Image (cartoon, rainbow, N blue to C red; front, top):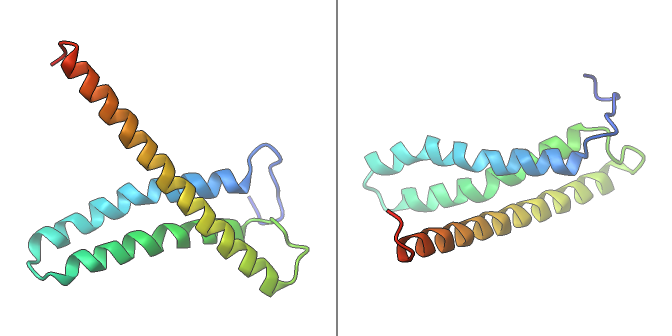
Length: 116
């Protein structure tokens, strides 16, 4: 599919959000052995920086490479894409928090109710 072929059924925001959401477990699985093997205290900070920068970069690349808002000037398009990528990352973090809360509630109530 070329850059000019636009699929009207899928939104670039949805694709960027999904790419941002799926990049987080990949980053975790790639950086976990480094943190375990290294005893330096700065590796946790490095992992935190990678967790903050990489998903935003992935969402930015997806939004910038699609034919979305090609009519705007380049500088304005880049700024708008950066803001959209940061907004998508914030929504993904809220979604992960909601999933963790719901999972904790389900696990807590199943244990109280006589589950395993």
